[in-house]
Length: 305
Image (cartoon, rainbow, N blue to C red):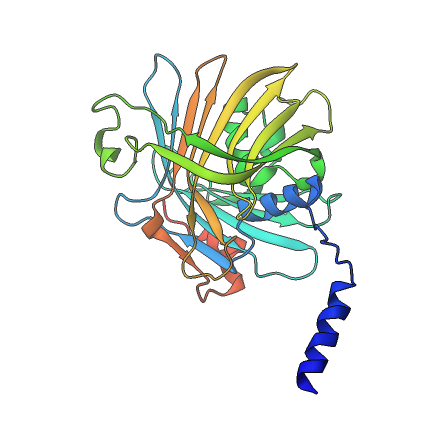
């Protein structure tokens, strides 16, 4: 009887036509996943505190001038409900702006502007500031600020150009011998990195408003991790800027999308202006036990110069 049952089952299965269903992601879904990874929403919080001389370092170079190096700390919290998406605290730890702090509150509602509160140590006061995209900064600095925080998902429309397996060389900012001085111990600049054999989404993101510093950008996004390795910016059909990102997995998080770029490098094609930001991997702490009151003006007012 058992043999007869299995024979009957095989005949039944052979008579059924099975169809394989493909669940391909849309351009908007890919863009949303990439946005989420880039903003580290897969962790509760992230604390990047300065340890000795090892800190987040931002370096900019104008051809013919000395490097501008700024050390900072960053404290990000995603542990919110309702309309708040995240709170992000940045503290400058070097130079003339040492002790200046900015607390940014990001809102989910696209109609609601983000809130920026700045602690000015010279005045010992907190001031509300305009959104940096409207503060007259140069396109080089804005490229980083938009990448890190400012650009909102609804500001662009998305088109998936193709998905294919490819190799992607990731550039780093070049330095001459001795140019970095004391920071040469901490900033990697001799590494050559190539992303090999990954399935990559090539995504076109077009800025909806006119008169922005770029018209559209082409991003190369990992199809599994949704890490955006490389982005080319275009204005009037001409490439004006390129950005490279090197990524690291955060802690022991099981989600493969729990990542953060630890090295960000951009170059302006027309002016040769360069900028990079390096985050020491050992300084990154995630999912710490921190009260929500940490992300308030009380912390800003306690910042020591």
